[in-house]
Amino acid sequence: MTRPKTKILVDGGDPQETRRIQELLGFVDGQTTNPSLIAKNPHIKELITSGHKLSNREEMDEYKKIVQTISPLVGDAGVSIEVFSDEKTTAQEMFSQGQEMFSWIPNAYIKYPCTAEGLRAAQNSVKQGMRVNMTLCFSQQQAAAVYAATKGTKEPAYVSPFVGRLDDIGQNGMDVVKNIKRMFSKGDGHVLVLAASIRSLEHLLYCFALQTELATVPAKTLELWASKNFPTPDNQFQYKAPGKSIPYEELDLEQPWERFDIQHELTRKGIEKFAADYRATLSRIAEREERKTKAPQTQMGTSGFPRPSLSSGRRRQLPADDPGAII
Ligand code: G3P
Image (cartoon, rainbow, N blue to C red; front, side):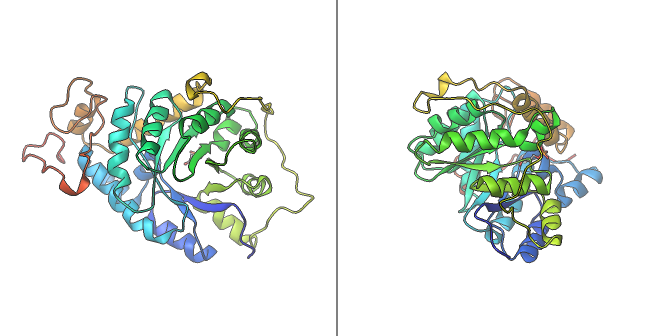
């Protein structure tokens, strides 16, 4: 196989799957995870179907175990770990979670959403030397804001445009990838494009043709690619756009990130879906706690999402009557 220039990441939450793809391809450059994918992990699913739901802390610990198993299986594109957030989660709460998650494995990238709070958390993270992956990106303006917010990062930041979800609403999702690549060609190279929500071989081949730096791909699409003997696009390759084209915008990357229009309905919906999938794995008590918006009683943040301790090695023991304990 001629290894593509685009780094290949597995989009999933199951270490067994990553191992299988590693054997099939002979390599896996990295991995991306998110709350929906973690909820689909076979062990988590087994717990849930047997009625054994999790506390917030247990959910974090399960997530940690999963990424710690995946971490040594992948190459230098690392493992992306997503903070739990909903529309109320503050930048500080995201950042606190990000700090703990970053300590789990040596090759972590912390995923924050392309929202104002997510961008603030990312700005702070890169100042602290953390690697970030800005997720739920649906527009060139959001990618420009990521560029501006992560300037000065020691290691390249990732931005993840979601192709398939734009296709779903009748647009040509690959246009956003193409437009961001074009815009970044005028930049300093500190943000790499990680094409996400890849649903087909055509998406993948077009990523290769556009030379996106990275693509995160579900196992089944990688298996299809392997079954066809790892095709790469030739000069004749033409991508058949499924929807309405998205025009390129001339944007000044030197502006502060707050100047860009970062609103996108799909970002909002994506956060909602991740939060719902996360909540579906929680015990009723943990869920009730998680929904509280008032001051924390145990280790909850004001958003209701877990507020991890800053040093994961010295985590406080849960009290015996932990309201989030398994019921
Ligand atoms: O990496 C993002 C991905 O998991 C979302 O994919 O198919 O749910 O849009 P999809």
